[in-house]
Length: 174
Image (cartoon, rainbow, N blue to C red; front, side, top):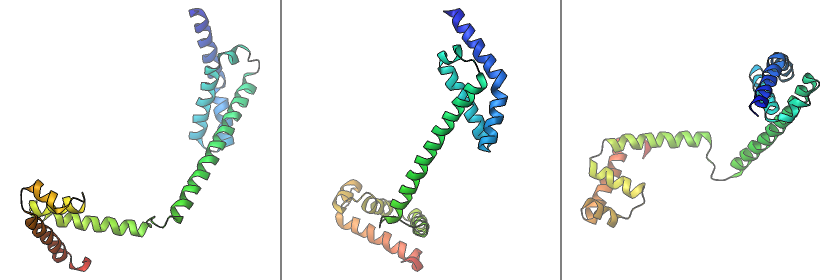
């Protein structure tokens, strides 16, 4: 069994060394891209290696490699076509969704978040924590009061303090 594996390995190495350059050149001309040609060359030899029976019955290596590579090219084209259709469908769905933000809306949102972040950094810890718990974690004021160990009335003061700070820090954005 070990001898069979050695002879198979030798046959694969011989096939690779004899035909790799030629197959790569053929694929490069066909694809017009060195990187894709390199990938497909390796995929072709991998497919041949995985098909042990193919090596034993191979009479014309170039024809066999060409056929194998053409099948891989067809598979690749099918995958690309499916991927392009899928991406086009996703883009169409995204554009038709009323809640889908435009790039401008995304930029405005990011800028607003940056401003809020700057504002929060300049707040004292308790008002900042109350603001985050209420507006980000959607916690009721009573739960925030328990968590901070203060009254609900104090939590309201913290929230007002945070909102007033935000308004005074950025009057153009209020």
